[in-house]
Length: 183
Image 1: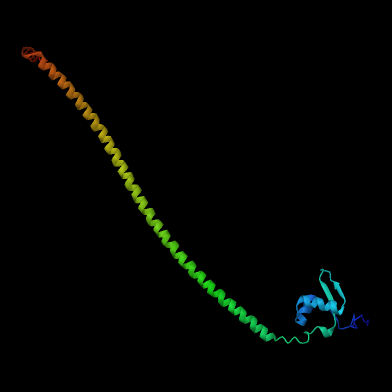
Image 2: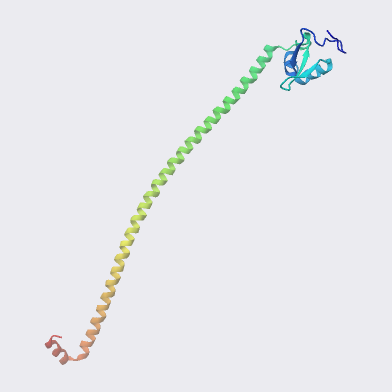
């Protein structure tokens, strides 16, 4: 056995290689405190094959530091209480989110129903517009025919007026002669 500068055994038979994290867990201290402890005590250090720093820790230093009366049950109870509070808060938030989703789904369903109603109404109006356009086309065609017939009647009236004026201009004897011939 060799003694180091501060008097602790370097390669004691019961010493064990531990990472800083393992030492911190065993002594119930933080990892940075474990690093400071290793440096302060001058324990042998080396990196393993994975690049993790390990220290050779004597057996009397594996246990929690003196003055550290950590009640594991109290810590566990405290952690469980915090977790239960978090779960309750998350459950409330989930229920609120589900209620919001349900109301939004109902609103979306109502919007779809309203859209479908408006779609049916617009289809009905489009059919009515198509029917009115067909009636308008028929009415326009009938109007064109009526205008043409009115034009023809006007032409016939003009011809009859011209013939009547010519007939009256002939005099009575000429009219009788033409009537006799069948003109």
